[in-house]
Image (cartoon, helix red, strand yellow):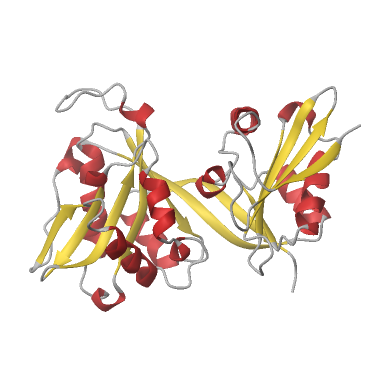
Length: 307
């Protein structure tokens, strides 16, 4: 008989099984099973993170859910059911367990029909969308754009720029439910990931002060077939991980050049495509990206408890 188990941490024996479950779901659905933040939450106990396992003695791991910011009004969950065991009530059991642990909202990656149906059956309402957009890269993108007078660009210096970046990010994303809450420990956790490249975190300065940034992300597998300085066929995909501007610098025309700097950095690595995520209600940003060739690739949706 299937059951749901609550854990505060995931050990080294269970972690690979959960990741294999995510891989099976991604292969079946065509979209990532969980977000980066939730993937980073898989591991030893950490404050505000609850893990829910749907298991069976014979079938093993049937599904997984994670609650972040548990115990707060911002508690949010993501859940995954093994494709071989769907339509058997396991998704609803995990969702009910997440709600019982204080979840106020849940993400549906790709906003697929079964996820919409599950959310509707549980009485949740669609409250937010996150658009994944993509654009091809070409040789013309390799040139850095001209910057407004007085601005210069450089790479991130680990250890020296850490606190500066955290303060700038908090100011640029004040009120944002995820990005604006990143702290020094969150930055360091991302710096420990195999994809982190300090040269890919571009800092814009004016008068010696860091006023904006464009953080790019490239998974190692996307660079595996490229050698430094090589030409020829483009392969792989990079990401506009985050772009932030100090509120005091708003209105200086930095958005376009700042975006172009990141695209040039990715294009020079002979990548074929760049992707980014942008909130559905950020109409101005979406239009800006559309003007430079980005189109929607997928849409994630957040469903919330009414009221």
